Amino acid sequence: MNHNDVVVENVTNFIKDGGKVLVCGDCLKVAGFEPNEIIDGAIIGTAEITSRIFTNVTVVTY
Image (cartoon, rainbow, N blue to C red; front, side, top):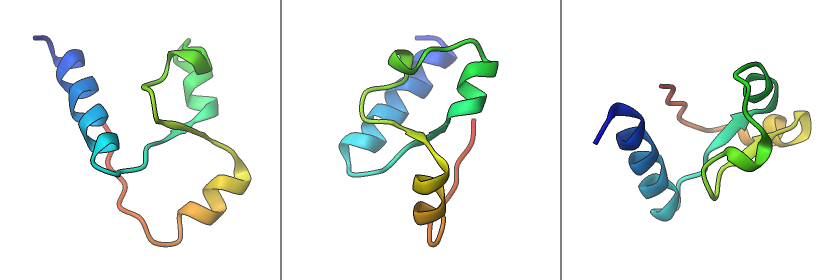
């Protein structure tokens, strides 16, 4: 299992356990990914979503 597989597994388990994953839409584009390529259950952030979510969260980056 490579590093990317481990990250996908960890994030997938986090979502299954009730965690929320917000993906920066601009970052997604810059990295060359399409919206349909994100992990199932992750949310592509918008200004409206971001302003509501970032009031009391824990942020983890890879």
